Length: 317
Image (cartoon, rainbow, N blue to C red):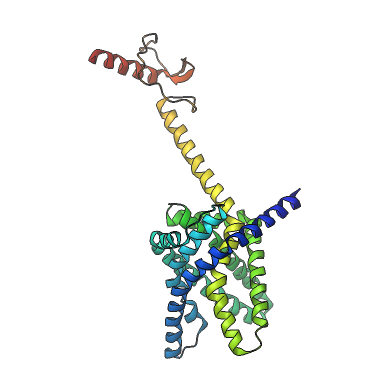
């Protein structure tokens, strides 16, 4: 049964992917412009400074990430099953509404990759001399995986829900291992995309072809398809969990408010505009027990209050 369900989900994924492929390619074209400009700037910085560091190139992520908000916005609409997704308005709208938050996400991502990479390299080198260092190496790899899974959720959650940055990172962190199956599906999809791209690059038999294929893949194919793969794997469950949690929170708040008002049942609205002329209640009695009145359980003090308010309304008429 589970295998049949997975087969249906996989079929649905490829059907949606090929159906939306022209729109995904158009999204990549929109993303390619800032990508090329920003990467070109950091390429010049790297050459002029003589540092020749990979992490200078990777700094591109920080100013580029706000534009990735547009890509995420578009693919989020696609995985929700929306047929007529307007690419340009959604792309621009995603950037305008989320650029500051995605700039912060870019900084966090850069820091996470920088620290994880150098920690793994450090302990890998030390581990070759002393096996005890493989323990912190394993811990660093686990932390790197944690950050990877967390960022599966950070982007789609930001463009979908109007919640605080604290809640975005808290919810994303909780889903890293809470939604492990879907995270592994996303990783599997990313690996397939990586293998396809690697195969294409290996088929480039000259340096010129290698450069051309790399540019085409990086600018015009990979970004939106990568986002589509991740959102297809995690978006549905993420959306359901956040909405259900918000609904449960509102239900709890309503129950607490009803208890403060003395209402025992939560599926009923409080009485309104009744005259309570048929209500006989001893106001001088001790205690504040629940009283059954017109199909509802309410505290005696609350009923007394409602009766007095009804009498005041009657006197004003």
